Length: 325
Length: 307
Image 1: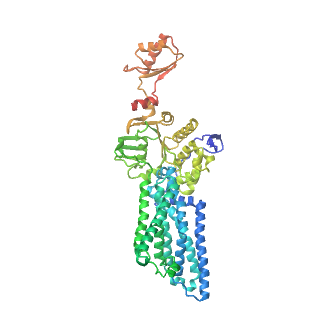
Image 2: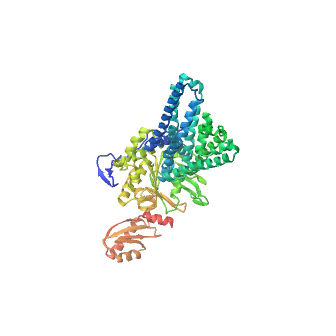
């Protein structure tokens, strides 16, 4: 084995001679695992990279703040109502969780943009796929790792504060029969808070895979998010205004849910068995409670919004550009 | 035993055939893959790595089938691609350690090894800088480091001196030469720069238009079959050239006072050619400084092969 004089590199990139470092090459004959869960390495790296982003922590803090404030409001309202001898509100815990979910919809969406927009787009820009796919990693491993990384981050922001509020309810209202009245609430909470992570992670990964600029991927997804929200809102409002007595039909409720945000709210409404917002307004206008959108179309649409972007991303993720023709 | 071999390999991009019925064996050591732009060098590397599915033929790398054992191949090889590439947003040592983990190394070993490899590639001082801030030469070296981190048995270097200044090029070629000799690492260097191949490789494969034009150990390709002699005189001498030509020699090249003569079809041994040259020198009153059987340059080999 020969030892060459060490060359260290200055900040300007020029090499200078130094005798301190051992510059001999030693082979590596240690362990090389052929892991089944190769995607986990990619997922872990994605999570680590995103944990270093201040914007992620700001948004996570904001979501947590919403839940804390909602928990405090709930606590004081319940205390006041019990002192006044008012009857307990039906399904109050789930209703509170649903309200929080609708409040934090935007910060959770922004979290998805922060953690997901650059997940593959930045790799495309830096030709990182050549590094990844020259290692024993398939493009499915890569894509799954990226997806799990983004999903985990968004799910943490969406689910953990909700879980905290749930644990607060569990501890504070155990003696009032919280558990007996709501044995399945934790499962419903899980479904309602993980669905946003599922949808956002899949969609942003799809846009990110087709872009070389994180900002472009984020802008495209934001465009889809807000355009579908506006279009479905306008279409739903027109259906309501054309209906007899301006009643909200099931079809109108479904149309109102035909956006990313609408799917999340509509599904949560169903899962929490909650009441749509605007009860006081409806009571003043003497309008009945609007029907909830049917769950099956929402779930089918959710499935499509998960599968289609991931399939599109899979087409785009490859180590080399193959030019046909 | 060849480190890589393909047989009847055909690769098509859509309707365009890039490699056609290609059969070649890459020997152990350092092998240069030479060819003009568009010869199919990079496509051959990508096919060996499983990035491109062949339309026909078979191949193996380090004993593993390229069609079915892509992951196993990629675990045992290292690739230094032609293009700039890195994992964005992380520093050099994290990047190289991550590359090691992707190759299957345990995390702690990968980090230790990343430090070693970065020292070897002269990036020790810059290991905590983000790769985005690196100069072109440093980016080339970090690509080599990420390819070496898991101790590959075969290293593919695609245009390793691309974009380097003369000093950076020298350093890179020294690194390649060092790693490919006596370190248990076989190297395939793809380049269109003949001096790079000449300086680093023991054998060469010349490609053109998706076909192998010539291949073999550099030493045997350089041989002229004993029909050429190189003579160096004290001073250039026209009478000497005329005298050699009278004795059946044909002037091949002149470089100052250095001449190369071909003795075609004479069936002369080295000794006889030497005697003829000395006779000619005496007749022309020229002083011979030295002579030896001529060797072809890599440029000669390349031009003969592609033309």
